[in-house]
Image (cartoon, rainbow, N blue to C red; front, side, top):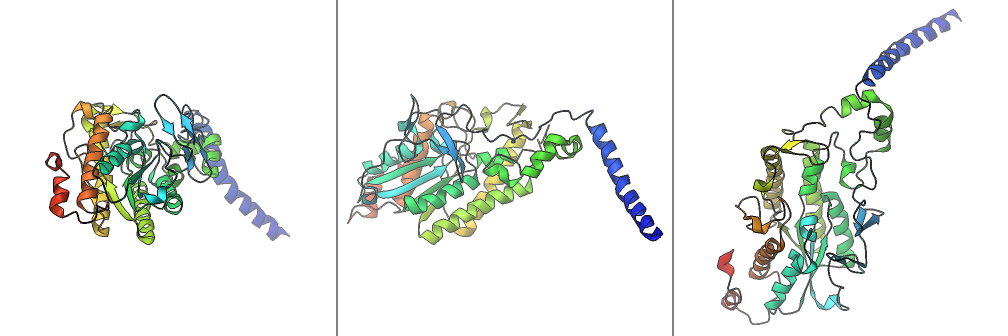
Length: 360
């Protein structure tokens, strides 16, 4: 009996001392970390609030609201940006353009998005069958959400070519401290992390300590997740026998604030943000090269100087910028024979049908 009491006392001491230390540390931390819920993305309505063209989605977190019309945006009954789909989409050569706000056409009218301009340009060349370009871009989508969307579209829309342009939201989300994969879909931390963030100042002291300035930080897990999602999309297209082309995301770094800007609650300098973006771009290009997948470069990509008339801000192209992207993408698809030409059209005739090729 005495032996059992000694063991119980020893166990109580071994447990009590660490608990007492943790309790003391918690009390001290509460003097400095008073925010009861500092988790940056502990907000299920983060990308729904003040966006009446967006609605919750069971798997992708959120999606475009079907049959929505405003002065600027039209979402058709199938949930895609732009006019209603034709009654016979199977009679068209189908191209699906997936991506984030730069594909959607942020703050430009429907007719000035790059997918709409691409469809118009290709059909002017009088292809063998009419071309239907689906604008499946959704503002704030990450690579994980785009992958989930692609899985759906390969079944429902059955495209023959997929255009992928996704990067910026993954880069932005990588700055969140602490980073976790759930950010890429739900924008919420796991339940246990949210509970600790709400009730433990000690947890907040350790997990959020880097949230003020991440200007020189690359989160390896975030980059790995981005590349894994990208590779998964390439695999999905290969398994479906669908041609896939990557489109360089637009960037006008010179239009960023010279010193710092704050995506979410994290401060970062312009030079550090551009350097971080190039790590992601390099990873995308290396993956594409390894898989033999083309990457369409254009004059709005990070490689070139861009005039102000081509951008609304440092990420989103203007109407003119979107038409320039569409022109470059259209040239590539036509020149490489990814869009069916009329029977009997030779390469020389195809060149003549492309009079502005030298303007690339």
